[in-house]
Length: 335
Image (tube, rainbow, N blue to C red):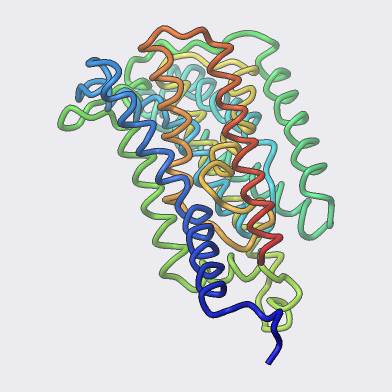
């Protein structure tokens, strides 16, 4: 018997430590969210009101929509840095249609609704274009989406001539400002999309293909999965979500600009990473991203309620994102 071999108690201790470590890696976002939530609940009375809770959900819809769709892209092994520009382009197109088609006799009152539809459709098509560039032309996902983001924003600037698109028809604002049972439609939209994508990833064959494409694309191809098509569809989903977010923004303020949505792509990716979805692809969950989005929104809301300077909030958010990336790297080293 080897005297240097670890004893049974040592092995059990190592197993316990590994189990605890794996639990923290898998459910750290849940712990962080609950800790921060209850800290805010006890630090200020204004935080725990129904109105403030609904405001947090409403304020999270832009990042939430883009992040939950971005989760699908990242799980499939992609990365989308153009969502902020698609957001702007979709809002601009929706505003132009609602404004300029309102005087067309055959369209008239339908112009606001057509604006919503065409704006979202444009976002979806731009997302699919990203997918084609990344998969079929084999352009690096970072380079492709960074480049198309510049192009899309430039096109938005061109068609608006650097001017603000203002919509006079108040019907156009109903998408963002309507309340149902006291809850904004924006909350229903982004939580609804989160539930739909959760079902797609967990319960459908396409969802299994998404995970396979990100985990081991070569093995997925050998098993008969069209990895290029799967990834292209995920980029289409990302464009669709960014398009919805952009149209909602234009609807809410009755105006759209080419510089809207700047930085949204970065903060949404940060929410995905904070939630625990691996940037390496092949693993992740929508519920994780939801908690990541809400954690970042809680930080902003909480710091505003306790009147902490914005730069402290940025530092704190940056440290959380850095910590999340470090955990992701640790998880992959262990696996």
